[in-house]
Each structure stands twice: as C-alpha cells, then as structure tokens.
Length: 225
Ligand code: AP5
Image (cartoon, rainbow, N blue to C red; front, side, top):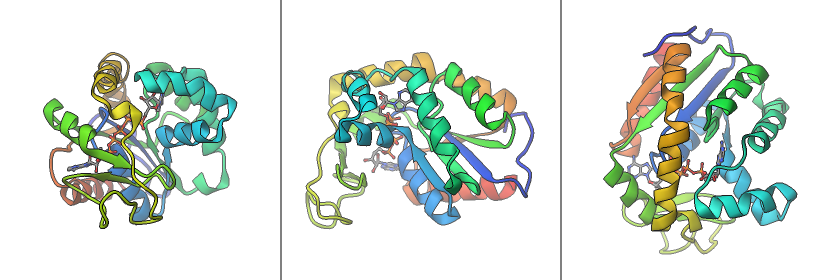
C-alpha cells in the first residue's frame, strides 16, 4: 500500500481504477458499484454514448478512439467535472478509465481534493490482455461486456439484459490494441507512481477469476474503511 491519507470512515467512498486495456477495470468497477451502491463512471462508455448520439464531443472523440489514441485532456476533464458534481455522486463513486494522464490526475485533485481516494491498479500479463481483448464482445445498447470463452452470453451473440446483437469493439482489433497499449505505457503508467506516493494505493493481481479479484478488492476496501 502507498502513502497519503487513508479514507475517513465517514467520507464518501471514492475509488480510481488504473490498469491497462483489458485488465478488467470495467468488469470489477461494475460489480463493486452494484455491491457497494456506488456510481460507476466509465469514461469509455460515456464517450461511446456521445459517439452514438452524434454530439460534438462524440465527433471529436470518434477518430481518436478508432485509432487507439487518448482523447484530449480538456474534454475529459470537463466531462468528469460535470459528472461528479451530480447529486448521485454525493455518497461516492468509482472512476473507471479516468484519470489517464498526469494532467487529468492533477485536474481531479483540483476538482475533488487530493485526499480520500482509494486507487486500485489491476495488473495482468500482456499475453492475457491480448486474449481478453480479442475475445471481448460488447452490447452497443446497454454496454454490458462479455467474453466469448470466459463469460459468454446465455444465448450466443445476444445480450443477456436487452437481447441486442453483441459486437466486437472497433478498438479491440489487433492493430488498434497495440496503439492503446502503447498509449497506456507512455501516458497512463506514470500515474502508478503518482498515486503510490499520495493515496491509499493497492496493486491487485487481475490474472485470477473475476470473483477472486472482486473478493480481494472488497477485503482491501474493508480494511481501508
Ligand atoms: P475504455 O473503454 O476505458 O477502454 P480501456 O481502458 O482500454 O479499458 P477496456 O474497456 O479495454 O478494458 P477493461 O480494463 O475495462 O476490461 P474489461 O472489464 O472490459 O476507453 C476506450 C477509449 O476511450 C480509449 O482508448 C480512449 O481513446 C478513450 N478514453 C477513455 N477514457 C479516457 C481518458 N480518461 N482520457 C483520454 N481518452 C480516454 O474486460 C476485458 C475482457 O476481459 C472482457 O471480455 C471481460 O469479460 C474479460 N475479463 C475481465 N476480467 C476477467 C477475469 N478476471 N478473467 C477472465 N476474463 C476477464
């Protein structure tokens, strides 16, 4: 565990998930949010919704996401500033995919204070990440995530929740995945040292079954609160 101030038991639970593409951030953030009654804020999902809705933000983000590049910091910071100010975040929230650069981390500190965040860095070997991303399938309607081998839908190719046909994310194609991993190494990995020094920081082995990772997260959160 790193330095910084431990979260106060009475304070809202605020969690940041770090980790490379495919580490299981979305899977774990979704499960933890449901179990702890927290809001999950996924910047990837918000951007994909903006693209589907054809908003100005979506039009700016789409070509960058298709190439596996990060979307400019100022757009993400504005999006998060607006989102965490909403009433449903008052009891706490889980950030899945933000911050992803040092300027984003510093902006979050300005918006929400530097203390009281629990940071989970989920680590998974690269060959496992590649298998997870190539087998991932996604519901474009309700954004549920599956894997063709490890968590297939009940009916092949159809979302369990809304029966929509599942698709492969464009950015899960091999060439784009390479770029996303390079962006992670260059721009997001430095956040590990940033948070290790400032926050309640946990490095988590993500190369285990989903339930085992979730139990580990719950135990560490329990110990932290
Ligand atoms: P985003 O959607 O956030 O993608 P990502 O961070 O690359 O993360 P992924 O969704 O690929 O992986 P994950 O770790 O959530 O894994 P998951 O749980 O799905 O961002 C997409 C793009 O948006 C970025 O490239 C960028 O362009 C833009 N963007 C977003 N945020 C931004 C920001 N802050 N700044 C700038 N740009 C931003 O799991 C993956 C697969 O593995 C699934 O199939 C799942 O079923 C399976 N799986 C999960 N856990 C396990 C397990 N324990 N065992 C076996 N299989 C597992």
